[in-house]
Length: 168
Image (cartoon, rainbow, N blue to C red; front, side, top):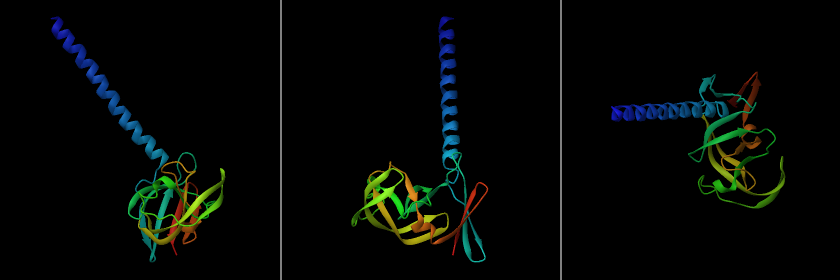
């Protein structure tokens, strides 16, 4: 009888562990969607233009998935950034070549950056080529700022909690 009780006790513990594991997976997915509600940005064709709508995240930022030179990345839209700002640690992963170094004024002060060019950048069905960017050792891993070197090639409109990007 004690063998059956022991087995029942272990089954109960195992059920709780499985339940907690499932809850962890569920809440991790929910939190990821809150941070980046645009993990799969949807595109539309309207009058010959491609349009991508980005939903604002809970912090009020526009975060979206995209690619740089075919590698999946996450962008944070930053109208205050002149160029696309990429963590220097991602240079080889994204197939970028560091060029001339310069000093850049950022929200965190003056930093040294290396200029580079992105061959291909995509957000949804919007594809842009030959984009000015910089490699910034002061940025944290995975924080790619989508600056004006991209946004000036698009029409962008902010309505309520949506940012609409449209090809020119």
